[in-house]
Length: 330
Image (cartoon, rainbow, N blue to C red; front, top):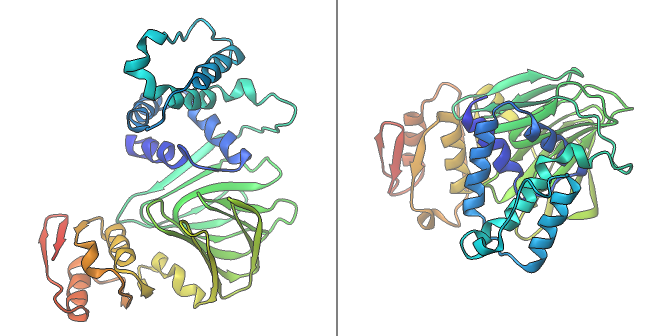
């Protein structure tokens, strides 16, 4: 696996809230010996950026964790190093607990099937289709990551998405199909729907084309919404508000056929989609375009230069320069 793919998986999970099953699957993958150097390097980088503070309770948690995994004397932490390494210890507790999950999942309250996890990352400038073991077909958009078991041996067919994908789910009433994201869980038995959950976006949205789906907000366990075909649910991360509206559902996944269709989109959303499709970096003054909404469609055969030319005709004062894979908008 490429280093960037390993980094994307770990960064997507670190510090986020996920279901217990998803957490266990991720921890199982983390403990595999494959790509050990890349995993360790990414974890060290996250430690360096961690703002966590250390308290007396942190030392107690670390000591307790060492005892639980039988490593009381193999991972010493000297308090004399407190001033130098103190800010990392809270992160250490998290990583240690993650790395030793096989010792902890034997608790009777946890059911673990430990299937081999598969990660599927689609880089910028690309779009791919895959078929899962149950026959479900998924179209994965650029800059997206899927993590799923090679075989669905648990009571549910649970996968994790960071990015955007369209799902055509194979029917199996005995095994609900669940797509987990950072903020939402989407459950279906057999249906067609799309999910957009890029890490840097301010919203997560899911759109139903056929069948029925149940959408739950992770922070609001009791809040469940049932969508009908042609409906889209948008969850705002900061305000925790949910908006359900009627849309042209198939247009929401037109990216799989090479189209980019924007309706009432912000400039930030528009630029992010162009970056993903054309694998470019676009620099611009965000404040200059705040508060505006855009309605525009780009066809599959149009290049990034064509897209920029269209925008220059739609937006007053829009000028740009292209240097290799970097575009600057004034």
